[in-house]
Image 1 (cartoon, chains in turn yellow, blue):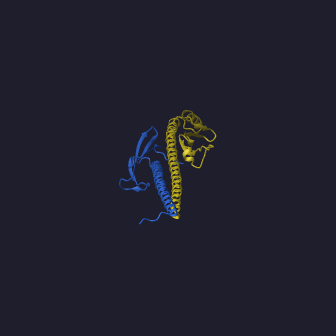
Image 2 (image 1 turned 180 degrees about the horizontal axis):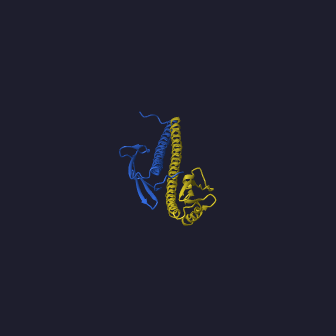
Image 3 (image 1 turned 120 degrees about the vertical axis):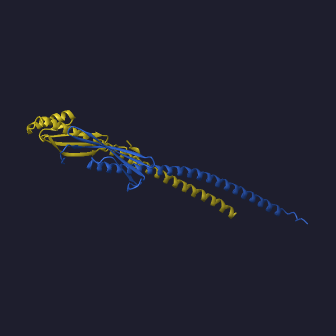
Length: 155
Length: 152
């Protein structure tokens, strides 16, 4: 009688232990998958940000070339310092930039996805000087941020 | 010769027989339970292995993307310093360390100069290819004015 009860109870304990082990293993697997998915999403977001950042750089360098060309072509006709403001206004108009007459600067902001680049040039006759070259990134602080936000907030 | 028939003897035999039958039924139930648990465990282990395999694949992909981004960015910054250095090929191992011989990553930088009236716009494309077939492309540009020093 004792032997029968022992055999039966051993079977029950084994089943319960197996069940607990399986549940623990499943939880570990799901956590592992969530972490991996999160890491993958974060890496892809980093890749997209870098690509957007360098796209802005390309646009800004092209703009720089057009500003230089405008300065050279118009500076040769008006070499006096007083002509800088009209040159600056022309550059701002033709390249869709903004011109600040008081500081004699043209600036333009390039936006690509969440990344923006603001370039500011000060004009000196037919030459220019890069005053600032700032890259900024905007973060979407929406309400649905969770612990594994990488998976849920993929853009 | 045979044992004499007594009521006590019959009762003991019946009890023994019932106990024997119950024991056999318990053993059958235990075997059935073990087989069911075995199938359940096999099923769960198969699912868990699939989950772990997917995790490993995602992690490898994330590592590759992150490493490729870093390598491409480093190369793009080197290009910005010296845009006139033209096309080149570099090799990196799986963790992004430089290698002299062909390794996990092959980085190819292609530079295309575009001459303008007053300067040159150098367009660069950084292309990364891994032995696993992962590719990554990054495009950038750098403008150099003719005969003038650019100051920040």
